[in-house]
Image (cartoon, rainbow, N blue to C red):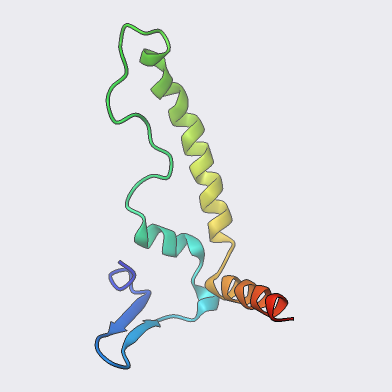
Length: 99
């Protein structure tokens, strides 16, 4: 999926591996998230609720707006973070553990 999104390439075999195709400072986590996630993070019931139930027949409509708002908030946070920032955080944590 990362290859299809133009974010990475891979080389098979001994000495092979994955390579990021763009500078980590230019790739935000939202771009990566959209490249690898095919579903919505919050989903409604897989089966339709009981239409005779007053909660069941109305819950999906009520939750759709709440879930969409939460998904937009997630996307805003991911858009502000780059791969470089994540790498830097990982290295800081590693250095703290090594001390």
